[in-house]
Amino acid sequence: MGPRGPTIEHEEPTMDLVRESRPTLVAPRPVRPQPESATAMLRRCTALATRARVELLSPHHRPATAELTALLAEMEGWGEAGADDPDPTMIVLAAAALQDLAERLGEPGAEGLAVGVHEVLDVLHGMMAGRIDATA
Image (cartoon, rainbow, N blue to C red; front, side):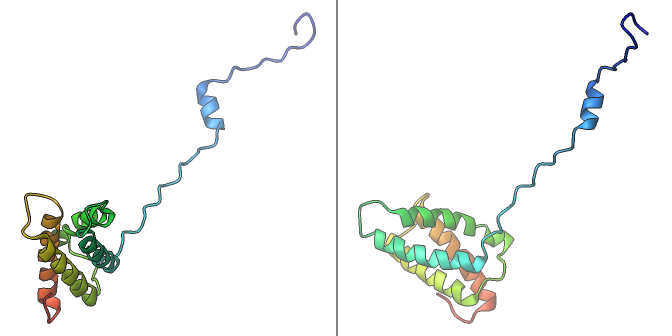
């Protein structure tokens, strides 16, 4: 007892006690978007190749050409990794659209859209060789 009456002793909390008393917060896991299916990519490729062909007639801004170049870069990897069993009709349609665009572009240079078009055409022709009874 102290001069003014009974005293209550308080223990100073340490960091260990503070840590133990806090609830554990778990950050939510980032949601990974589902990869675009190969059939949907082929559908986009067909549409973009057709738009890029039209854009070749205009010296102005070419948004489809830029978007197609990015998509072709993704599709080039199908040669090694394969695709998730795309619709055979879409393989043929995309190959036909790219073939038409390739004829308008001429021979591929060292880089750019023409190279991507020819690379993906090779991949699509390889996919068609074992599965489809037609070539684009």
